Image 1 (cartoon, rainbow, N blue to C red):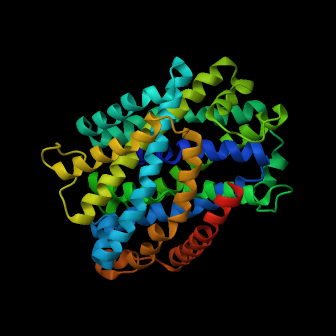
Image 2: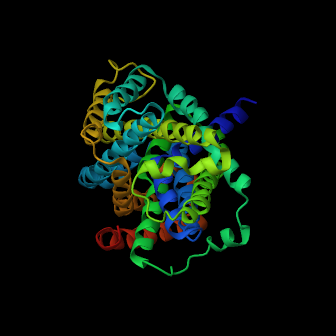
Length: 405
């Protein structure tokens, strides 16, 4: 019964990490501009993420190391420092976007400009990290994040043409603006396969002291949790495709355009449910991104680290997330548009994918780390495909950002 509860909480937590400002922004833009035709990047990204999340958990269980530990020990300090620099930039942009998402949600319900909410939001995120425990952060915020299921409800209330929806699962060339189409597709992939997710996940497995009895649970959590999150992301895109084009909105330039997305299906409550979804999901993602960065730095340099420990026990770990939040809040506090920052950060995340993915091919086949739990041919094939996809995405991201973004 206890294991079943842990699996259930793990699935809920996975959903909480999957749905955040990047998913909401990119899915809404995709639905408004291209209808259902960009559902396929969500599917491809989710399949890739399932493999990476499962391997992150299996690596932690079998080796008693996190992915960051493994990268440093297997590839040395130079490779780790390069990876740390790149992923830190990505994480900083993601965290700033999440703070912006929370601040915008508060603006929607209060009428006070989002930049005025930036510092209180950052302080709240920091305070919960400083005072909270890993279980409180992981499970508590994730449970509240289930409000995002309102988008699934919205889909069934609006009853879309399911045959047309199904066609969006197959990649095809668009009838208009192919560069913009490609840019949004790449941004969706960046939103789905965010490096902080599997870095956070492997650290969480160590925090919660998963042993080899959790190997099956890890597989279930990775598969069901990520799939559930993908259903919600797809629902956001479908609702956007049903709501915005009939109103003549095909180019979303701000979150204020996205805010009424649920009102045709759920009435006036739809507006508040959207604000709650945006605020809570971004709050959870901000906590995970901050912790993920602190885990990455502390593990890479061999410092003490644990969210369950008191800050005086691991001061360097606490200092990392404190400084990280302090820097990330600045663009939102000075009024940088959160939607534009989000879309840009998702594209940069896609650019950084190879650095986060390549280590899995070596770590998951190294007997010194994982022993008999190393990858089989299916997982290795998946990793090779993901690496190839990540290189393609990285090569085309900058041109698409320049000409289609």
